[in-house]
Length: 364
Ligand code: IPM
Ligand code: MG
Image (tube, rainbow, N blue to C red):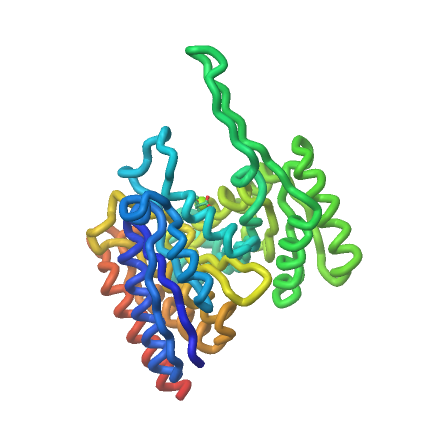
């Protein structure tokens, strides 16, 4: 097939990890006889430096004319002034909103090789296979914000959490469709004992599952309890669906089941097949430019791109298997390595490429 992929490397380690994922995508194109064209654009801090805005119109145009978007990370100390009017994160929130990507899928799987490296006991995390479906374009990240001086020495700030029936319904349907292809269990996470938006979330979710997905098992749990159960019994979860901020927080926590934030990919999807794929980690400015960042979350995001936007399931699986082989061989970056045994970003990606080329030969 022929596809156009927009690349938004962004800031910090973003360009390093995207470059490795592009090598993997090129190897897929070669091994399975596809033509991928890449177009690159600026987002985040580097876009602020060049154009004064975190999401230039040209970047949006590149993304809108592509079949899929692969993004690295945005942000860094250079743009961190809390008083700044333009912030790198506006680029990320802006592109998700502009492309209508309301469902953010964050899969977490733990193989035996990973279980040994998790900060949690191996017997707790061994066999984890869950997906968090995070609502991505609503809630408190997008509601009205205010910040005013009420007196010379007293400031007042507000963030508003807003959800509508239809915003909840569409992401819940996406989670239910996914659960039907898996173990059929949906856990909806809210704070319905306190928040009005959560009570609406719970009503809408219950009604949709009862009327459209009676074959699924639905459970509701409160976000604080979920944070605890994720560490106590993570293998019980199949699909977790939750609002924007809870999903943001719970997925950083869930990444520790896998052993590192550097392992978790994500897919942001809307109504069509165009999606945005990015690692869940940030720009890690402390290690940027050192060649030590873990490229696997971005490589796994490229696998999700192949699966969800290009419909290339075999190729997606091959990339995931190549990552599995690399982890099982103990070729890992500093975030996962024993002291003194860390491989560089490029060496880890090289190992993935070797395994992938081998799989391509078998598939051919
Ligand atoms: C994430 C990140 C972003 C988010 C930040 C960088 C705006 O934490 O993708 O999880 O909160 O969505
Ligand atoms: Mg986050």
